[in-house]
Image (tube, rainbow, N blue to C red; front, side):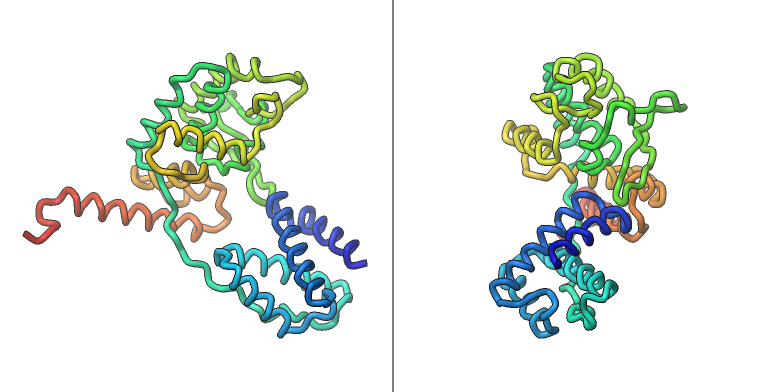
Length: 301
């Protein structure tokens, strides 16, 4: 019965709470991990006490997960027990007062404008079908600030050229759509890829995905990060970053050049302005670094 209810619960998260497929998949893994622990402890979901819940939190801590990972795992479990309580399967929720550890607020990793220009210029030297694709991918990540999951979900029809300026129709978190401008260099990379690169990769004329792998299938998030790692190994960047750093750099560079915070919030698809405000701290740090390096009276003699 519980396994059936767990399937119904995950469907509820997807269709009623409109959580993304990636979040639902993470919740499923977290709950299956929790269930495995209960099995080892000879407990069922309905037998857990508040003390058992605390023991599980301690166990997660012993495994040295990141605080954000622990917070997500506990969020999945609390949501599951809330569901069990609402449906009458349990009468008392042992997790209702359990809190997650506070996550450390690390400043996002960014790539400087000079490093970004060097990286993109190096990629654009390859005019093979895969090279044209990669140039369009990284120009888009930096030029429009998309999440990697949003980028790989793009279809050909999501590039809209009929507007006053070209835009991307992006489906973000919670399946919310937003329109994001496409810069000139990004549009040039898109055009070259669509005209000369994608036709050489596509195997099925019915395939709608914009970005294809060498098999002609939709490129995945893992595939994008693999491509980035390969370019870093070739010296395109001097340090290792994830593809998400291009989104961070997009926002930080906009702010550095006078972009309005609420405009940046809309472009990024952030639900809350407080999420976007982290980039003001990045820019303040960069401003301090430039001052200390450049001003003749910034240091004591």
